[in-house]
Length: 416
Image 1 (cartoon, rainbow, N blue to C red):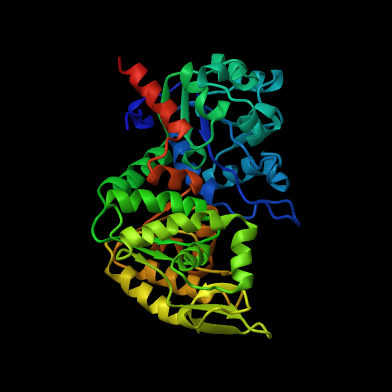
Image 2: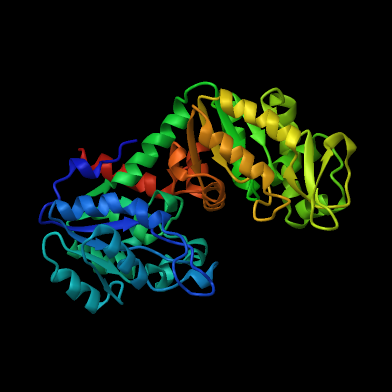
């Protein structure tokens, strides 16, 4: 991709607008940050800029209208970044108003300023994006861009996790400013490109979880392009595939699928099983919680069950472990079952242990995916942990990502 890298830019003494993704889970009881993964991932780019003598201005979002309990101030983010970087990260309770602009003007070389949560601006929330269709050039007239862009010498985007968002902070500044990809962004794009375009063989995709629209979007692409030598299915993805293959899951499991309109994927699953059945692996046994909460396994051939299917069975796990151990590239999106419960954790735990212990290059991404992996294994044993979930799936599926498109346009313009 024709994106200029931060490492190719002169930043010393320049005012740099950095757009990372440090959106973090918030504990509902304490209101404090519950997971620091994205904060940790942002550190190299922030430190690089400050060490090079840039005046660093950070804009970022936290929460949204769709997850309002996470829509909180960035003040704690500044505190934690200060601790992790070992240098002050100033914070101001303003996004692009007079107080923020004055604070930017007072920055010295190597200083860092985090502005308030950009999602307090209507133009940055997801509902605005879906209701008001602005082009990137039209976004240059939004409050955020027209007030901050004149103060900046360079725009750096390090927010791959939000690359699928068509928001002013993600695609507007590139229309006006020299733009570069941050260290994390370039690492994620390069790593995921290698998985998509030239994976070491055999290449295995491990698809599970509840968000099966992501899994199905990716499955079609990697099967048709030949990127996947094998796909193993679990979670609701597997249940839909089993249903498509003619299995009667039982009323509760099938109602779980239909109540969420996920039965719309059954015809597609049936087509893929017919065309690529030798590369798609589905469970041969599944598990549910018994009347006393104990784990009960049943062969797919012996379905239906009146209990809700919550995991893959031990026979399936053994088969999947063998495929994982033989793979040279392993991509994982989604846990194998309801891993938060004792009866449903077995499949997820065993598959993560297999991935962590495999010789092949492993790549994972997505909030629930990373959370489930962290629960059972050391993330240091995973080859690459992407900050993106939806963005990563769309990238691997060949779907356009607005931020990457904007970065490429800026790169092409500046190379003329």
